[in-house]
Length: 481
Length: 128
Image (cartoon, rainbow over all chains, first blue to last red; front, top):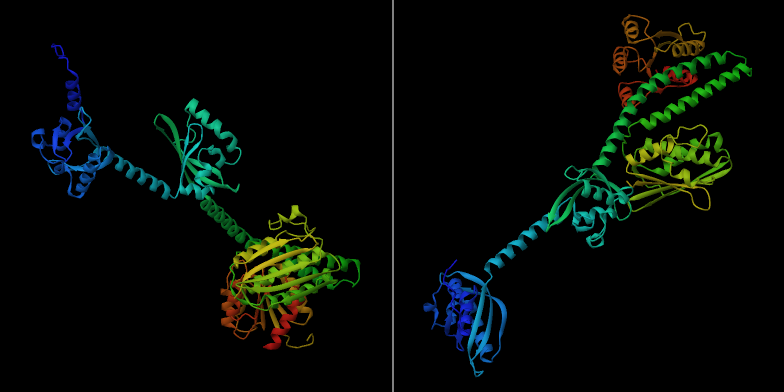
């Protein structure tokens, strides 16, 4: 603290003091640009003492490439116009370029005559530098976030989405603009959709972390309503005093699908191993029983009741064997041996066999269309056609017709098997390819699931529709040879 | 054939008593001279004898002491002119093609109709 009382200033002195104490460079100059005053701020900013600057042209602090600015400024001032604040560059005594924000105004004498100009410059280098750095840093983070493979989103304490990156757009099928500002629960299926607000409220009141900093597998919901498994890790932060939560979501669909595929493969392998054992342990004794019973039967009086019973026994054994065969086919790992096969020829051959089935006596089987070859396993194709034609025969269950068409177009060969049966009720259609699902009194429910598996192993597809007019159409597509 | 003084001999190899019995009865009724073996060891003993070779062998793929094609290979090696019908309950493509490569006359999938086997034996012996 100074113990001397402050000296009172007159009006001019006060203005001078203001000018001298300003951090801005305040420079007075004549209409032709000769410096007449140079305040402390100018000394600090440009590095020249007032004595060095006064009397010189202002041009000496203007870099060469900006010299024409001076002409324009002097021209404007000469016409009594103010040069509004603008960013430009000046050069200091030690040759350093600095960014300045500059305003130049005309100076009038007490009579209102134009006598010169005042230039007020503020050093904005630091601000400019910081701004550019900030922009670069923001851009860097933005590009990291936008190029991230994982979905990243930011929500506020009420669950409103504040950021939604490109991966999130891809993952959920929403554009960022459709999500920003909305409740994040729009990305979740029930019950999470309804419960999420409560989860957040609980955390905000109790601080009990169930997912934050832990991460776990959750279920996401896409725009189209489909759901998918996703790993979610949540981080918490405070931006400008507000609590925010970041979510990073890693799509697990592919991994989960692969895992279930592996599990299915494993179980099929086990099933295959079991089938080989069961085949031997069941089919072998069946062969013995069948043979022995047949021999005994041949010694009985033809037409006797006992001979009839023997025939029944042989029939039952054959049914058991058929069941075993279905199970073995289902369990057999399909390793198709692809070759050129004409499906029409295979169909004709199978149709000949099927026509011998007692159930097919009153059914007309017609095959029309191309005889172009497909790439398939002849043996598997035969089994598939046999399954499907017998299914059609059983569906018709009396007089009727089966119409088969073979049509090759582009790289695909399409085989459509249409029967005149009663069709399939909608609730059953959905389960048609489920193993062990059957509507037959005696059936394993393996025919269609085996057919589907075999077709898929040969890059083929199978679909079943029941047109409103009645009947059923089974459509198979296979790649053309 | 029932009156043939030198009827063709058939060796039936299976560990399942009922199969052996059914085949022996069915083939015996047709006049064949049928002998039986229950496992690979009995087959090898039968083959090591210097006389009385079978004219045809009906061989089960899986026996208590054999579960591959080695026994078939041994028989084919020792008696190249004798047809062998392989019987199997689980005819994988590998087994079928392996057996045919070794010169098996036919692979018959179990269960089969005994009459079918009788027809096959007659056909095989006809060709040899």
